[in-house]
Image (spheres, rainbow, N blue to C red):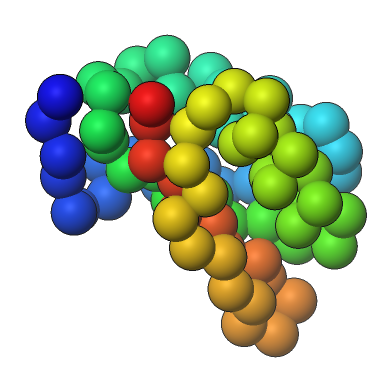
Length: 79
């Protein structure tokens, strides 16, 4: 398995409501290799719970989550 530290892809899900941030992230994950990192930017406050649950069900790792103003940032590693 290749482990990278640089973000391979950024998903801009700002302005989208559930389930679209997850859908866009799932589509982006299909393009990545195992171990790649994807950064997701979202403005839906519910995305915090959504990404935590989604990462558990899919096996992808939620490496980091943060918030800057109204923008939530998630860093996920593809399994």
